Length: 366
Ligand code: FES
Image 1: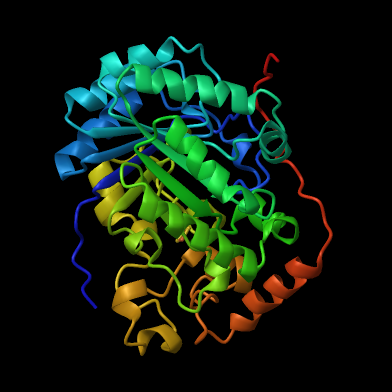
Image 2: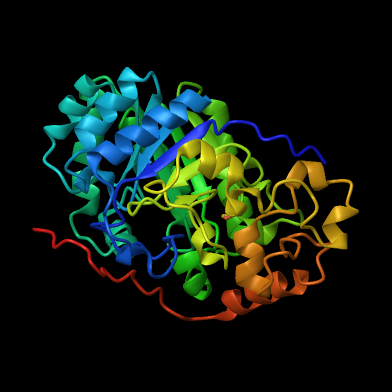
């Protein structure tokens, strides 16, 4: 299998792990909010410059909630001067609305706004923030007023899957250019809550039919439908392959090949000690799953290994305790029954979702 190292194309800066919401489906690791915001503005600038020198073009600015980072505008301006295509991934909460115009002036191209429902009650049920929907609507309107491209991302769980039609109409009324109906994947906090969140296969099928119906009717807003792993029989090519495309930097400078890679027992390099080139090309962690030498025989002998790269490493570790195993979503995996068992258990459970607690999080005015 080809192991030539190509440059990172997709850079994600997680500017802070503080967040105003407590979403039940958060995929981030359980101790996520404990990460220190120790990257200075100059450190972020250097990361941008070095990644751009290597060929990175797409930039995601995310968190936690990136609006809470005081250097956000300068970071966007720097990225824009370097000719990155910039995408702010946000809840829309945490700053005065006047930030939107300033972001546009700094060169921001796209806002990806998470909206869980068109209904205040459901929104509150999922985010545990009574202002969430109202503030998101105001933020979306401000983005459109300032000529920013708007992507609405709607994370789907048992709590809002029956509302998919309404969500599509709502996103359209906000002027969204794209909508992602993102059936959630079960990592981090979401995995902890799986018994309360996983919809039935029947609900999923219905949501897909509703989405297809709207897709046919409405051509001006593109609608994507993300299928959850737990109802698949083959794994996704997570991150397009480890260390192939995607590079994320945490608020403390730790560099990762995917957002949740630090749940794995590997040591990841810090950009305060190493250049992006060293991190990407030389670090043990980024090289760990390149190629197929790490694979066990199920994956190494599989004709589909060039397509899915053995699936998701974080999921394999979370469900089997062995990060070298095939992703158990795959029905060739000896651990596939773990996924089937999780589904079975979740569907008969009457557990209530637990909100993400706000360790280190800011207090929000209501
Ligand atoms: Fe980490 Fe898939 S989320 S490899």
